[in-house]
Length: 158
Image: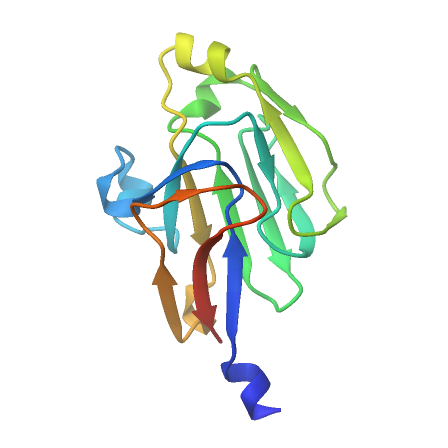
């Protein structure tokens, strides 16, 4: 049982793109790690997928962000873009509903990249572990290009 608690867990990339360090993004709530630890992706595709198995615990009314409670109790937040709450749902099409049980790689939200970018918003997407106090160790795969639902975004130990 004790070995199970110490094993590595992973979050797979929820979008295709380049992984960037949180400290480099233009939103202080994320760059200063006020809501938790994680990384961000500068995405190149238009579908956000679940990075692990778990429950969709929160889908923001504006559809620009969602939270999950993973099967191991980890809580994550995926915030699509910077300041995109100002779009008031425009450009975000949820493919699941709050309370759904999701499998890693399952599509969650489809975005209209062109609309969001043309309105002047960044699509840099933070992926945050919000209950980081229960995590013993996190390793990030920054500055790498990742494929959604396939490549490891980060690993962590409980």
